[in-house]
Image (cartoon, rainbow, N blue to C red):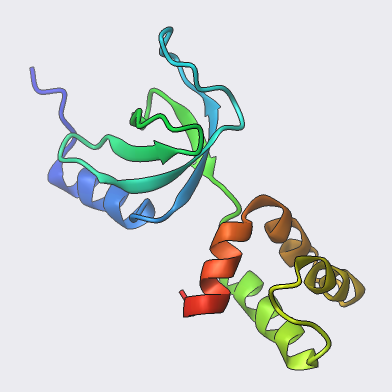
Length: 133
């Protein structure tokens, strides 16, 4: 019996979790893992078995197993958040690296998604400001 996912499933996972994606652990059923709910990681890739290769902020490199472990994309960067960042920048009222000022302007403009995003994923926000990615 073959327990490996199909090539289509692996390709879907690679599209859904490209390298650089931030994930947050909800639950892991590995009794030897020291990871706990709320821990975050940067995805390094998806292997041919469909495991999501991670570099956890705590230093672990334990992979996530879709369908076994429970996790989500952390602070998912959406088109709406991108538009809100550009709208804040267009005001000219803040240095975009002054997170507190950006959050204040976002809140004043009703950009609550951006306010939350800045709380959950500042690294990805800074990468967007620096590279546009």
